[in-house]
Length: 282
Image (tube, rainbow, N blue to C red; front, side):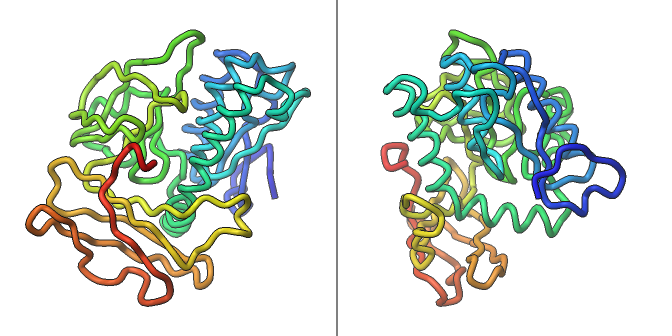
């Protein structure tokens, strides 16, 4: 069920979306603010119409909105046509494909975080202060979000820009596209080939899967556990196989400069490969 309106008790329904937003920069920013507020009201799954609903979306705006939409639990392009990527330029099709394939490779992370969020009553699209309540700066940010517990997303909210000021909670953060490492605080960070700023918490293990053309074709018997570690000696993450729905913790430690698993996180039900993050491989 893909619900639109909500009231007290609507948390029992599985998914809500942001309604008929406009196709302007201001609408993109308002959509994210609405999603953050909705998550603070006790809802786990929320999404929106990528590119906005009303009127044809300008290609430049659609390109920036696209990774914001892919880096949420549910993704859909819907509204006044054309919204299909092939209704735009060939270059846009390539941009769309890259953002879409990013989510497909991250599906084990999305699935595990969805399971964890629903069990703990947390939103998948998460205001920074939910994870960092003791950090004053995290309470002041309304144009970034945490996608689950380990990935921070800062969409490009203005036309014609390829970088933006980003606030990072305490600790170190690793750019998913460039591999650069940033400390907590404010930074001006350039987006990568996919037009979004996306960072991973230092010490996170993010499960990936081989790219497939649909979720029905994904090979869940082989999971790649990617360690994001700048200075961390230990790394943790979550993994969940659709076949049994059991949420399992991944724990790894650095030994002689190399990370090794503490135990088999998949309990023999699938093969897992541990590897260090390399931006070229992602």
